[in-house]
Structure formats: C-alpha cells, structure tokens
Length: 140
Image (cartoon, rainbow, N blue to C red; front, top):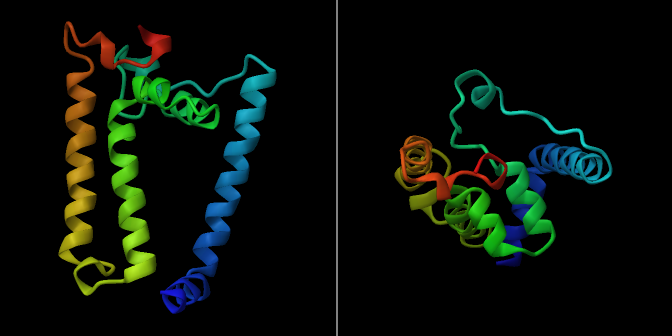
C-alpha cells in the first residue's frame, strides 16, 4: 500500500502541483469572499435566470470549510452526494490501484459518465416548480 502511495506521488507530481495551485487559488478566493462583497457570478444564471448544476459550489466549499456539512449539502446536493464517491474512487485508485479502475477503464468511465448524468438531471430538476429547496441559499 505504501508503495502504491509513493508510486502515485512520483508519477503524478505535475498533476499534484497543478492541484496545489488550484487549491491556493481557491483559498485566495475564500479569503476575498470573507473580507469583501466580491463574488464570481454564475454566467449561466445571469443569462438564463436558471440555476446551473454548479450553482452553489462556492457556497458549498465555504460551508465545508466552516464544517457545516448540512449547510453545504443544502447549497448543492448533487456535489454533496458525488464528492464522497469521487473521494472513495480516488483513494481506491491510489491505495489499491485495481485494473478494473485504471485510467480509461470501464469503472472510471462509469463513474465519469454517471456523474455527468446525475449533474445534468440535477440541473434540470432544481429549476422545476416546487423544487426550490434544491437551489442554493442565495437563489431561494
């Protein structure tokens, strides 16, 4: 298991560096949103008036940083349900590295396309009448 972890860090150094940069950018955005009224607006929502599947992700992440799991789930339920699945898939690949979940495998494709379908359906359902509880708090 430790060998798989070392191998992962050695072979994915560039991707980990990129992830670290995005993490730092996200942290900077969090600090800006906490100290100023500045926010990045959702262009899809501004143009159509509808919430996209990603609306509420910033609020989701901020609530997670405050350890408010229920509040985070209220901001974007689809991401709250898919995140543990993606985390488990990441850990399976790093620690176990099974062939059925290798890069480009059927297992990975199933997770990817299943997530896309869930997000698209969530984007439709959250905009239906009487489904306002699925909208992020700033749109309710």
